[in-house]
Amino acid sequence: MQITDVQAYVLALPEITTACDGTQDTCLIRVDTDAGITGWGEVDSCPNVVKAVVDAPLSHQICTGLRHALLGADPLAIEVCMQRMDQATNYYGRTGAGSHAQAGVNIALWDILGKACGKPVYQLLGGPYKTRFRAYCSILFGDTPQETGELAAHYRAQGFTAIKFGWGPMGKSEASDLALIRAAREGAGEEIDVLVDAGQVWDWKTALKRAQQFADFNVFWLEEPLRPDDVEGYRRLTAESPIPIAAAEAESRFDEFERLVVDGGLDWIQPDPGRCGISNFVEAGRMACRHNRRVVNHSFKSGVTLAASLHALAAVPNTEVCEFCMADSPLRHELTNEIFAIDETGYATVPDRPGLGISINEDTLRKYQQ
Ligand SMILES: [Mg+2]
Image 1 (cartoon, rainbow, N blue to C red):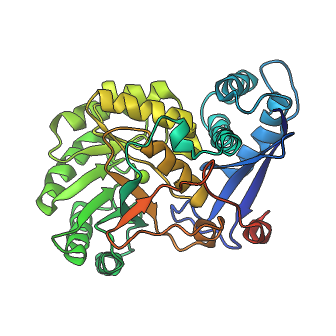
Image 2 (image 1 turned 60 degrees about the vertical axis):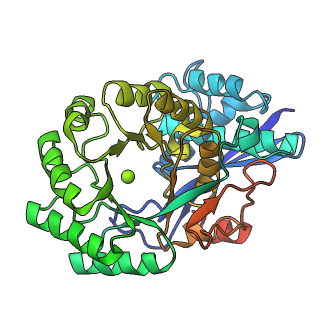
């Protein structure tokens, strides 16, 4: 089998706000083959930059776009394809959008392999350890404590057993931060797990103080309180925090995850398949387990990213929860023909059809394509 085309589709809602909401736009990756099998992936990055990484013509041996690098390659030889892309982007894309674009292609290649073998991706990864994961509802903080409390009550009523609030007004002041968490806990009730995504707002000392304060509200984890590459800050914070610290959604390469676990001491790593690919997700997750740490997906895009996440999680031992984005965007819930929903116990199930087990809703794609 040979790759005949690699395409990137930029999709966006008519209106984009400054809210930290990754469901306002996206970049889909499509890989076609001479066997008639098409694989799909998705990237959580700057969509137009990712498209440029895919489309860039040959500049020289270690500086070229992904399509040029992959034309004629065997899509079933996923590691060989990754090596080709790694070499092609050596000059300009070893981190950031260059890596993110490769991650989207990696997802599409696993989709092709699964379809070619007639098996779900998680089987080809050696799973499943589990096929169902307790879903936490992932949303942004309300603008006020009252709004946050109302959101908590709203999503609790939908059957979630855990709710995460992120970004928004967190970090404005000590009093405001505590009011937000108090409202979230009151809205959720005592039975529901409350997770907090701080959104990179503090230094490690302030983060430690907040972790100590948030412990009074039985917070499940404190996520990304520091800048993604503040490994020393994470080392100091995780050494003393009374609640688990989660981070690493921004990372792409295995050695970055390893550094944040071994040196940074993270309790949870949060690989996003749309930034690190399914291959690195699984490798990083297994590494975290060897260090007695946990892995959970970061997924704030469409059903493509969620499906990729569930397949990867199914192939890693010692998992527990999964991120289940509930942002109200058609790019989240209408881009795949398959509707992802939690069951009556608040769990999400990995698709069991060949490949990722999803198909693209072409109407949605055309409607929002830029
Ligand atoms: Mg986050």
